[in-house]
Length: 443
Image 1 (cartoon, rainbow, N blue to C red):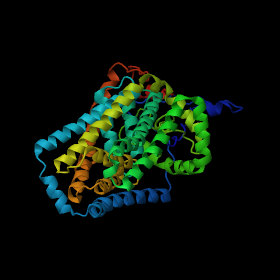
Image 2 (image 1 turned 90 degrees about the horizontal axis):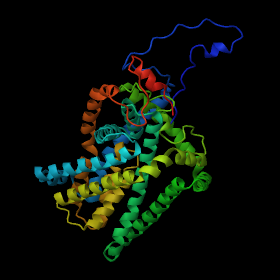
Image 3 (image 1 turned 120 degrees about the horizontal axis):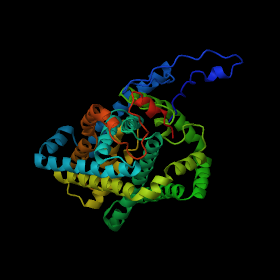
Image 4 (image 1 turned 180 degrees about the vertical axis):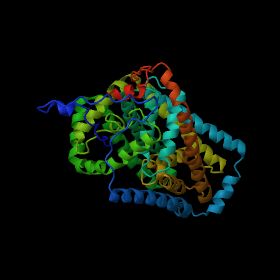
């Protein structure tokens, strides 16, 4: 994530270094409560804007192609068949599945509360829905979602340091969960290896070993400073140039995300130095991986050491409930396959949501999960109906619910200025310069 442009020199600082004194500039009036504090931002070039627009178009086109053509091809079915199967799902079943969706989202509020002490379950659910809604609309929309989440947390008077630490901690915990899913899938499939195709078993073992290695490296970085040095040097030696090249390509997207948050009313310093730019590791894209690993550990070790149980419980509950949602979708459309097989498809699908070539990984995740189910012997028509119905709850419905959460935040955010500050909040005076006081706080 790129650091936003540095704030201009305060009036009088540059002049004080000059040999002759200059008149003291007139004092500027404090911004009114709720006013947007102007910030400087480097404009994108015309070529960069064209490239970004092309990425959005390609992302949506790829998502449409994967869902409209690739999914029916993988499952050897047609969309009229899929829609007919989903139409037969009763409203009672639909309501039960919707309840599972919200139960999973509620479980994740424990992870957000664990990463940001003082956050309420309602605030966590609102921020999660709004951020996910934005992320699901644009390819690579995670940067915009993170910027909106940052703006919401700042409006609730949490400090820059607390918020950026929270975003880093939840990012690491989500990564750990996703890389451990193939490990769990391998564990549940191995006892049934005699009735499962060898290609699926080999893929499960490869994914399980790879996931275990990545998870072990992340845990080592968190647990030991010496290990952080070693892991950082190893990764830098193997993948350093590639990592820095990828990070350089993502800088502008993060800057755009910060601007989107500011345009939504994030007047509380969301796009300043120390804002969303610091929510990602290493604002300088030329920073070595070893330094990034040490920076990661220093920023999250205090929160993780004290609140790891909250973080883990929330994410494990979310993943577990969403598996029940996936299994419920399968049973609702008539897919009668053993739960270990269904879990393997769910694990692959959740892992592929991290592929940011389409909005929210839509299409990529469904195609991967469907391929696993078909390979395990599931009929094509109910397989396509299963992944489509699950996408409705895990992706599509998050957009309107996220919009509602965003509107609710916009309507209520000023109320929090008159309430007691939560732990880690920036100090706010009762005067008219409250936004300026918020923005003055730095990590």
